[in-house]
Image (cartoon, rainbow, N blue to C red; front, side):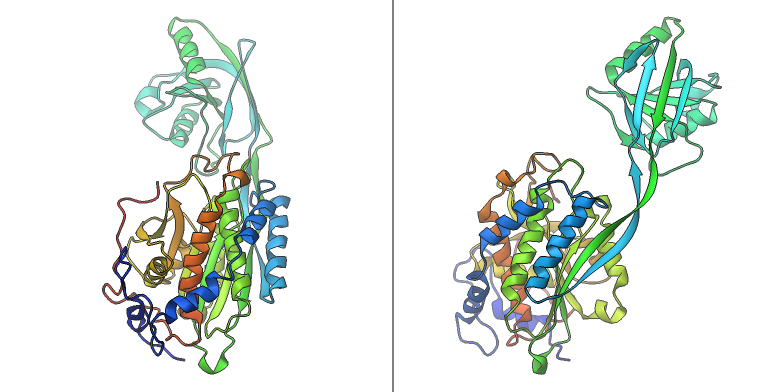
Length: 459
């Protein structure tokens, strides 16, 4: 196995961001301009219409983890990779899913608009309403709540603490009203047998009830929570592998390119993250028949929106040998919105690494210099904690359609898709092509590339 310091590879593309005369075109053993010629082998093969068409297919409906729609996306992605000649695996994993219940609140014969709290137990409770302030221990001291419904104001302590405090004081149900305009929803954090049914009310309704109670009126209410609960569901990762084609120069190293195929409920997820998946698919097509001395893995993760579940599962399944061989992970998440900001690289610790160095160099060569910053929140995180150099590629600030039903195909920019695919593709192939040195897995040497850190994280 050939292992040469990363500096040998990166100094060959040493540059200063924004400098058109930077020496970004030389590779060991290659004449000047050779690096851009190799970039062009990738760039000229990228067809942004293919990326756009895959986004169109994937974003035809929301792809919530564990649903039939997500499974349809998994099969589509697997078929794409298989058609390029990759060895593919659909990797299942299970997770707990909370089913949102139906909620009704009736106060003195009047139905009120309400929402549930995640992990509230089911139940129908009728009884007298008692004002309980913020439901802190001091607020509840001296209040008789046995068998009654506690009316609680939002603020100061968590929703879970409010429900637990009221339940321990004897309440049979809880109504938490907002302290600002608009509807209220939230989570109790995790299931707890000590919880009682908990629902939310608007600030207007809560203030009105609190005023009536303060005037000495007696109020009867019925709270009904039905159909909620936890079930086991299955999501899937799609793993596509291309082994090194040049066995004589095989570095025994692995590069991972990732994205996630699930979306949040109600959102078609054109940008988040059908864009990243589609860009990965296109890069896999482009590199399918290119000579390589490095194993390439394109991985589409499931259940990212539920806490990076798919990527954590994938990393957990890797052997120590595989972890040692992975020299870089490129995560593309939300890379196509016309209404988002500039393309940025984020690392978990905010430090440069092999992935950001290679991509910064590729960015200048392709005319799109990149900055970097600190941010987690995507599937590069588990790789970082496994000791693998990893970075997130995303446009920041994010678009106003983030996690909404408006994250649709008509908001996608082909120019931004092209930019991301070119940079990631050029960076990956710089490592993978047979005439470049093997890449050290360790952190890069000091300042092999000069590029700027942005202020703050993802906006």
